[in-house]
Length: 163
Image (tube, rainbow, N blue to C red):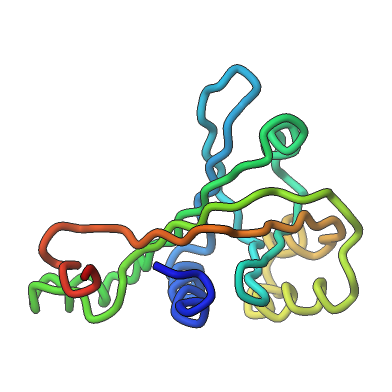
């Protein structure tokens, strides 16, 4: 799966994933070589092969960024209706999941534009106590440069996506 040619489809799948679960799974490698997976709800994909996330609650990702900057991000469309329709039809109408592989950049202050973009994403929750505790004051971002996209194979139900 080519990042540049399939970028709009990748972004669409990431939107569906966030809408259905409010997060993505980001895997990194700890200093001792063991894997570490953390949920991140603030990842924003921008131009082809690029994105950023707000780094506020993570403890292992900043450590991984110092020694091993490589990450893998999994986005899955977890919509119950998407899965029920696909199971009934015996195939997925669109890709159900994708992995993006990339390299973490430096931590930096978020621009006002980046903050506003994230706030629009979570605006429907701004009346909740959780919003105030989690997402109201996001200020630091870490960029990610992606170099590989990999579609997830789920048996014969995804055969139409593989040539």
